[in-house]
Image (cartoon, helix red, strand yellow):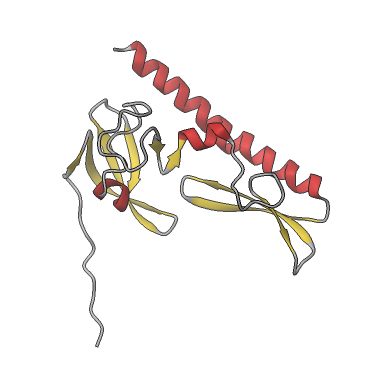
Length: 162
């Protein structure tokens, strides 16, 4: 006989500068919440990031200023790490040299993917490496770069208001 886990309701609870407003659409299969920051902006955060102190603001506190954060200096907005997007780093286990592009041995094709706001998007598989790279770069411009631009504009408005 199994047991039924009751879903945790964080509505109304405070986590740092964030107050949980309501449940949000899951991010990457994880329960997420709409939160209101003391600065006035709203953001969506997964349960574990709220409860373990990883996310304590909408990102307005700036890099390195998030008290109790597990990864100091990282700013998460809607489940997306601003600094990691800006850095465009290649993971150590990446064999192609391009983030989000990997070789599918079974299919003998290059696969292009991109992660954004907690979701992985499949961009296609390609015979030519250059085609997979092109698909990835276009998706970065469309998703990551526009997101970073909006974040930068919002941060500038926030700092100008102080």
